[in-house]
Image (tube, rainbow, N blue to C red; front, top):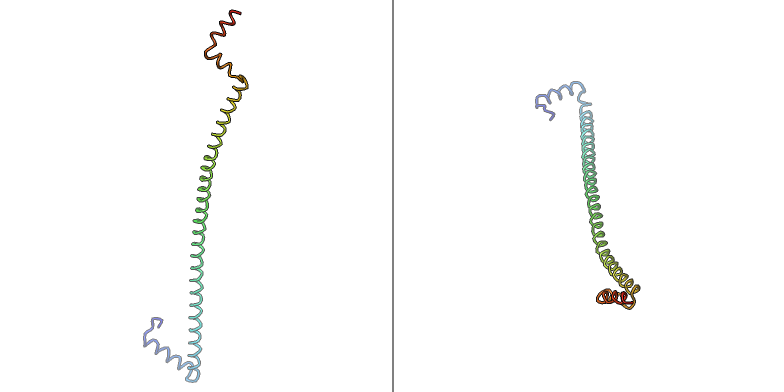
Length: 139
């Protein structure tokens, strides 16, 4: 106890008996025991409070770490969704682009038909062009 041997404890007991007397010694010993008991319980309470604070700090640190991981995962999911959406837009615009090409080709055909409804110019320009120039020269 407190690094004291039996002889040291006996010396303290003899001095206590001489100083306090046999009448007050038992009540004083009870009060000293109560003091040490309350002191020990106060130390244990402080120790448990300190341990709880340490655990709470560890939980806060873990919570912050999980929050960072969750934010990173959410950002990653947003990026993935964004890239998926871009790929979907590319696919849909490919169809639209093909449609526009078809419309352009149709418009070109319409313009050809509008300019030459019977297809006479094509015939004249293809095989009959030299004959027409000969007819023009004869007239």
